[in-house]
Length: 282
Length: 276
Image (cartoon, rainbow over the protein chains, first blue to last red):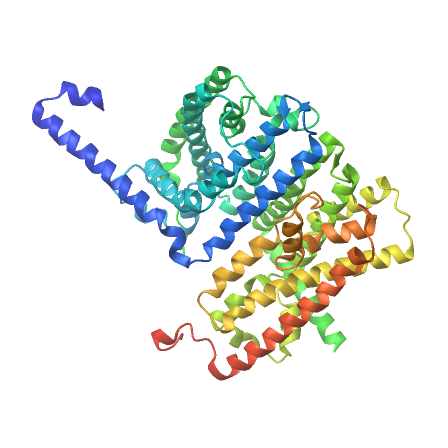
């Protein structure tokens, strides 16, 4: 787009710049509206968010019974694994990306979205990002603030790796969006209900991604296999960089590989499947 | 009375078969989903237990027992129908009227409605198989008394979960609009425990066996049945006593709410003059 802007006449450039600005505004507006979505049902959303505190408190209590103070198991000391679990919960929405596209395909809500002047993938991504606001405010920030009380050091293993962690997190979200779009394609191509996909994804997420338990701590060397899959690149990679338990260069290189492969494959598959979208709704 | 109840359960089972035969692919997909959902929930904690050989004072086999127990409870609850989860919807949307006009006592309709024994057999089967395996691996002396205790604990866990969902669902008698969200949030809270809670801070443990009794759906009964971590009479009787207490509370709330409903019906659609 920038190349386009430079090579065109001034009036054309102004028009393109204005269109890009409008598109950015539209995405921001979508994000802003989605941010208040969870409050539509009232304050009861707090119950669901409280669940996340319970989940992380249980995990933080379990680890000291498995990894004694001073011991290192498969590259993880107790401090590292506690930080890993805490940050995994803080970033749970970013490490397990779910856009509303699958449910919208099934319910028919996607019909009106096709008429919006925005690309479908970025539109749903903007909605998803808006949905992160409330959980970040009510869970992620308090968890980080409470970390010392919970006996966890929330700081990264190395300040020097923080920029690499940020890059890795962005790549992880991009891989997550691509996986989500691939799942939406399955809804279109094989008429699979989103709840079936969600069940399968929950299992994969719990075991293969490393968002719940560090992959190296799985038995039978399963982690060594899962490490190479895109699911690990969407969750385990940034967490390992943050906790200093993985080589950032290798992890980011693998993430870049998966981003390229998935974006190319999913875009091609979406173009081929777009005409097969059938809406049910009701 | 019992014959009529059994007849309705039979009718539910028959309809379940018809539904499966008429929607083969969808039925298979639903069954597969439920299987994935429950077995997947068990898999991650089991893998952790296998890696370390234990979780706190719980050997890996005991963790398998606890998760299998929870799976059996969950699949039996599912087979008995989704009424407890949808109670707030029945009440809040005025659909309780549809139940009240039926020529059956309300308790019988609520007990038998949605009975789908054949949808959850893979999950129930894997739960039972793992329960039997873990019992053997833990070298439990299985006697008639132990089996009776297992039965009492399973029944109590089911009653605890049902009563908890009913108690929250009853809020719809007074808050027809908000209760669906409250009830849905409460049901999410209760299904959360997949690790033994022994290492968890005392205050959180108390919360998880009282206000949000997730711990009574697998952890406490398994402690009692396996005698883990110095389990005693308290562990043995906590779930049955909680079942009685919560059951009574839910019944009281339901009767109070029903008395009000008989006078007012659902007020959710009053602003729109009439639901119909």
